[in-house]
Image (cartoon, rainbow, N blue to C red):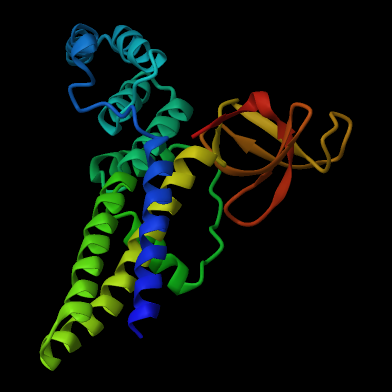
Amino acid sequence: MRYILSIIAATMLFASATAQSDTTAIANVVTEEVNLDNNALWTGANQAYIDGDFALALQGYSAIENRGYYSARLYYNMGNAYFKSGNIGKAILYYNRALVVSPSMDDARYNLEIAEAQTKDKIAVVPQFFLKRWMQSFRSVMSCNAWSVISLVFMGLLLALLLLFLLGTRLPIRKLGFYGTIISALLFVATTAFAISSRNDILNRKQAVVMSSAISVKSSPDSDATDLFVLHEGTKVTISSEVEGWSEITIADGKKGWTEMSHLERI
């Protein structure tokens, strides 16, 4: 039994190292102050927004984004500026980006609902299996980095309890170590899965928003193909594949079709 638990601990350590190295790929996240080098742009853009000059505010925010920096607050502010400018598609895009970085950002979620209410397409959502819906809802409570930190905490607890089991001389202590190791291992696996899932959402970027005022979704990746349905600016879609400038998309009610990539912008 001790040998088996030692193998489990070694496996958990390797999995954690892999997950944490993967998560490092999405580093480069800025704080709410964005970055000391960008403070002037950040302050100027915020002041322009307060003054009602949303075009100037977007110039500042976009300059920061173009330098390779991002944060939930930056995306949220850009979403607000686009919404105030009347650009609903871009507003929905950036509110969604804010929620990818910080799933628990209630302000972005609330504003997103307001922006989506102004879109033309009212698409019925296919109900999800309740367990999957619950897991996604629970995962969205925290960001990828937060789940990564928690998984490390559970890994440390797992190793400490394993040592307690292996080195303990009294039966109650060894029982505590044994059952604690099992519980910590399960929690470690769950939190690591949440961290990896959140990371994949950021890196894979399968979600996109329609940017054109209206597009015809085709039956195949060909401009002469049959029109299946029409989508309008601000509608969220899922990209499943791409072929020579065309994207196969799925909308919330399960309908599929092809549209040119130029009509979409990935979240």
